[in-house]
Length: 548
Ligand code: G6Q
Image 1: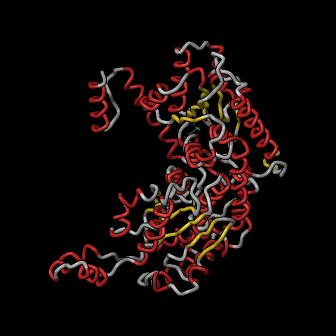
Image 2: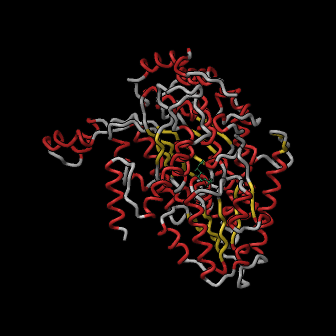
Image 3: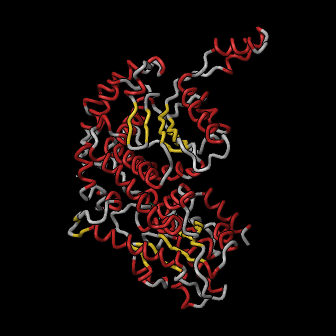
């Protein structure tokens, strides 16, 4: 069981507070010497993690590692990997790491060999994808399947979308996927308008098989298929389910043989390596999917076994705690310089904010310090022409992760060099800034008058000292994507342990699932709206009068 230690009451925290007072007014650039890059970067396979552009010294890192030790990080890692019920508020193990263990590595949890169960499902998925891609799986009119539509939301959508998009260059089976998540009927309408019923297979992805958005979309898709000319007996040819709830899957009319199971110890936002990844496997094939699992597993091993000084997820977590809890940084940006990773920030927005957006500690008390930051981001270079202004010159401190690749899947002239030139230039500029004197000199050379220089130079000055992490990888592959996903997952875990919170429940999401149901009844029955504050009542009444 995870210990219940208030991090702010540890010796290392007190020492970090003193150390912060000493370091806060120094600049990152003055910490640089010839060896800083070497000393403040770590390598893992074909990935380089450079954290030298942060306001940290050896003492900072030592104290942060001491904090992790004081908070029992090492025993917590053992507890997670061995299947202890560390998700205590739901009394569940947390075993997404088991999902990517190689076949034949037995792991017994609650009396079951989970590795055997996992690989049975992976092989079932492989067989199914083989039937789709060979054309032996036929739709109601005898055609083979060309399009897969995944219907799911949150953890049953975001991971699959992110990996599907990220691995676009590995789409190799001839099957394309579409994703429907929102209960907003506009989304499913557009998707249904774009597909051919006889060549489409719907995957209904829902751990509970009772989420209103998913079930509403699933029923709409089912009715649409019937309206296109399929019969009830054809439903099984066009619908499969990914779920933990066999009873509800049967009630929907899906043949349980076409159900791909996962387990209560797989959290939604950690579930893409499970059967939730089925749409991904449909597009990239089983070999590539297994390579993705292998990458995840390799980083799991690194996290579990590498010493703290060399441990990438731990180092990321500790640096982030430094800014979050001592400098008061409220947000962190993830900025991939690779278009295929355009959903990566959104994926880890959920991963991080749903896991560590908590204000009650593991002892049930209200927390008096900051926990999870707001996570956001967009791909570079687009972000540069949008929100980078605030990162460079705003009043807020925003630590950023920059992710880039040495090799592109589409070199396309010199596009990739231009992209990467921006990538390197931005982290350098964020750290170094531009002084008033440099601005004045530049303006002078450009022919500006003394008055113009005096008037405009304050606006053109950049304070610098804006911290960044850089992740430079050789190439985006299923394996290297696996490294990155696991790396961020374990960063989140490490922080949750130190912040003394439960990272694997999500009561805020559960609340959302309940709230709308009462109002839905009021919207549908036409009765006067009662039992609300005047704002909510006023809004509902106006909606009803306009929604005739
Ligand atoms: C993820 C959350 C949440 C969940 C969705 C969908 O960790 O629990 O995003 O995945 O609410 O839930 P179902 O899979 O049960 O439909």
